[in-house]
Image 1 (spheres, one colour):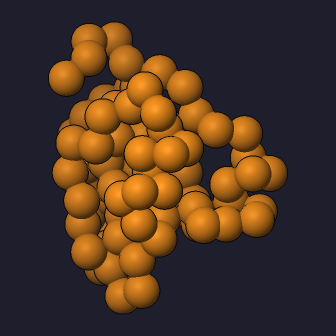
Image 2 (cartoon, one colour; image 1 turned 90 degrees about the horizontal axis):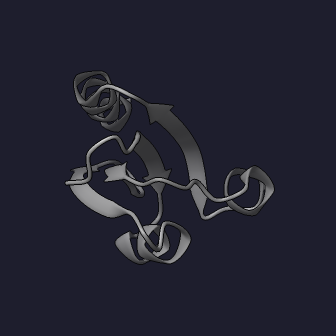
Length: 80
C-alpha cells in the first residue's frame, strides 16, 4: 500500500474498469453489490468526473484521507 496516498471508494461495473481508469492505483478490497461492486482503491489520481460518473461505467467516487472512513463507506454503499 502506498503511504500518503488517498483512499478512493468507487462504485463501478467491473474490476477492469477500475484498472483502466485508475491505472496507477491499487485495488485494496472489493464489496459485491447488486449489479456491480464497490471497490476500495488507493490512488494518487482520480479520473475526470465527466468521463466516469456522468457517462459510466463508474457510478460514484469518494476520496478520503482515512482508510477506516473509506472502508466503512464502501461497506455501507454495497449494502444499499
